[in-house]
Length: 430
Ligand SMILES: [Zn+2]
Image (cartoon, rainbow, N blue to C red; front, side, top):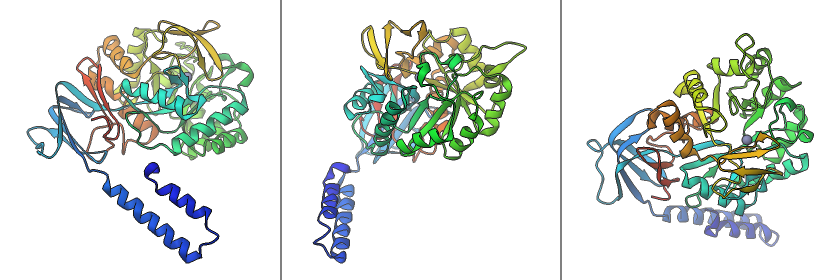
């Protein structure tokens, strides 16, 4: 509603407050509220009916399904035999396709030539438009370790982008930030710049929190670092989901971190101490502890297909989550591209810096198709790893991550092999 003309009026009212009496200002604000309400109700209550070969909710598959959208929300989902498509509705029929919830990417650095840490609206518009083409309807812009001043600037811009996010065409919407670093292990830092990696500190966390205006959803932290449990406790109490990763931890500190509130693991296997059958370490705990969900980059480069199968067998369709960890090079030709504050070399599916993998050029639809190929999972089960499971981790499953009455109308139309046919965000795009 920001562009409806009401807010500028209100700003004007504040600006010319002096000549107004107090009653005059109250009256003026009342009129503004009234106009705002009228404009809201002027917007057409467009009713849209989508029909398809199946609706993947994703906990069930409804054959010959129908999904009704009203005012950006899902109002009905069910079988065509049970729900009538009224003549007043705009009807879109996809007889050879399926409907799935919009994908949620909790770990993404950029795309379409831009990095989220640029933070300005043009960069975010390009990234969000390109994500939507691959079925992603909401995401956590993810920072990499950077000099403190640059991190704070990025957090401030991204926090504002999250706070001011409005429905804006077919563009993925930012949910809240993911801080990947600087509280990570120097032994498992991947391409994160060593000089900017810091031990966890409450003071620093408070600085990040203030800069991002509290819009932090997820934080990756290495549990073995000094003060990690204290920072985990404080951040968890604020509602930040704590993800264990970029870590060389043994089992004991990993368990302490879980006791302090950690509930997830970042790109399992990558930048993580390896599994040893007599010394399970962080990986053994992540794979075996059912209190943790965990994510993985299924691009065929970061983790071998056999390991994807082991991961899925351990974390199951209840707790496995797909991420892209995609960088600015996604959707672009080979070359040198920005990641955070540095550059990486991109060739085919591989992004490298000094012999280390540096993010990916994976898209979420491709990750889902890879799960179907590598682990022979059905589309329905695979889709859950990019929809319901990340929504549950972030605590937003009351509005996102599944197709049910009352949820946001974030819908992806997919071919039966998982190709994106259309993306609908808050009802827009249908
Ligand atoms: Zn990353």
